[in-house]
Length: 202
Image (tube, rainbow, N blue to C red; front, side):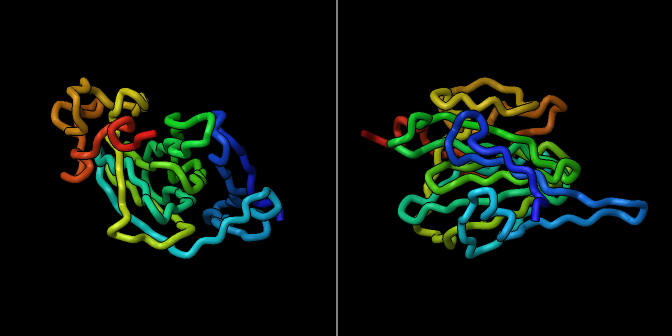
């Protein structure tokens, strides 16, 4: 017990949680618990995970902003190699922070984990040469249920670190680079999402 430090409601957004595990290291290396049900419950985190995923991406890759429409997923995300800037956007219509975002750098060195509950869009930007990204989900991935929003929507205003470029009215990666000149790299689908106002109506 007591193997994690939990920072709840980060950025003033209810439910977003940054978790820092206790790392036990010596001259041989280190050991840590990456998930412990009892520690999570002790900190009021009683979600149940049904699927684990892992991806590998190169520098300049931006994935997002993604969500599932009818079967939303809570995600517990972490980086096991490299570094990413990980972002969540509140899409809960009843929330006081609807449309607000929060980002945290996740690295193999800081070993932080970021819990994003159901009802958020999620995305990340790779800052290292290579990044390996792992996440646990509270519901299964359903291909026909995927939705998304423009990563650069000015109405959300995410401040992606190291990113240079000017918004030209779409989610296209054209003209965007990291500060070292690395081109921004998005999937074709992620360059076609619309902004939050065009994605949701009230």
